[in-house]
Image (tube, rainbow, N blue to C red; front, side, top):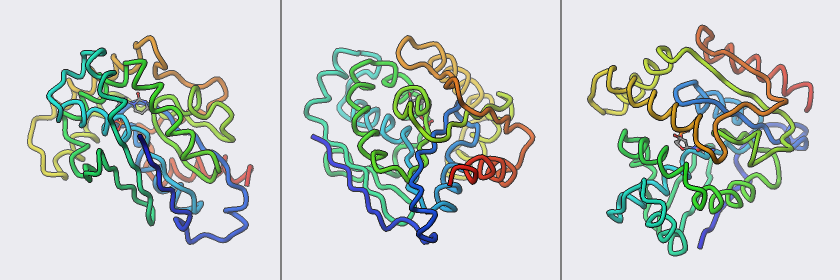
Length: 240
Ligand code: DC
């Protein structure tokens, strides 16, 4: 059982912009800056910011909290029918509830990151999460980011981006984020963790991380956040 609460009062932007109600799809590997730019774009457009990684992380959280092995596809699949996931949107932020418990603050630990990458390769998990993501985006006016937004979840998205960046730069960014969030651990650990996730996300047989055919590529390695957002806004503005 799953409930999604989409609060339409998410923006403060002029109505003519909201009237366009585009679906903007952003894909790319971990640490490339997707979340930061997606959140900023959504705020500029008065759109909803949909972080689909948070949904995979919530499933991973539920799996580990129940003592199951994230790699055990059978055990993970058996958990899904009893799983209740809620994503509540308010004022640009999302709260994730698993079986009624707010787990938002627990979703970005290295353990959950790694487990999310593992459970995301299980077909049943992807099938279970697909309609949830599509339901959140069904009215448009959404900036959705993940690994398969442009290819599987929103293949008819109005604008698609694929972000890339040098793996060293991505590891440094992710490490800075983790340190800022109070996690200890060496840069080497983050680098190895990211490399492992990259390999899993790009090489899995179901919905691997690949650019959609009509996606715009942006290499964020040497661009500032503002420069990336400006480039993207340039593309989106033509469609508003
Ligand atoms: O974007 P993120 O780091 O929060 O995502 C966590 C994991 O979830 C990532 O390793 C791959 C998976 N994921 C996915 O397979 N498809 C998505 N649309 C989003 C995330």
